[in-house]
Length: 169
Ligand code: NI
Image (cartoon, protein in one colour):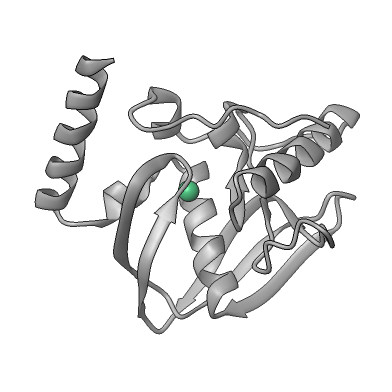
């Protein structure tokens, strides 16, 4: 297992949707293990393959973020079928958007579909923190960052801060 480098904004790879997984190969299993390792190392509660520069629709998540138990969930080719209710996700952060926390409007409950790592179809409803994590990670697979879900003003402030940091490097 290996900890993978996490791409950060403004890396252009983060801004384009990634590809559907057509076959669950040994390579895919290895990517999943490395993604989990990377998530626990960060530490984070979720990670999308795109964040590690992998052009595949795979996410891992663990709302408990317990690196001892390593009881993480995997979803391949996930998509959200239904959105119910709305809530403000407070101080949401992202490993690919360093030094940024923001309140984001999310659905309270979602119905999600996808495959597990054995290729079985899953369809389930989640609410609370896991619902937020899934919305966040599935956004990633579609090239959407938390920066796309905040006000234009806040986004411009963050972009300017990043440009300054890049210049000073
Ligand atoms: Ni993120």
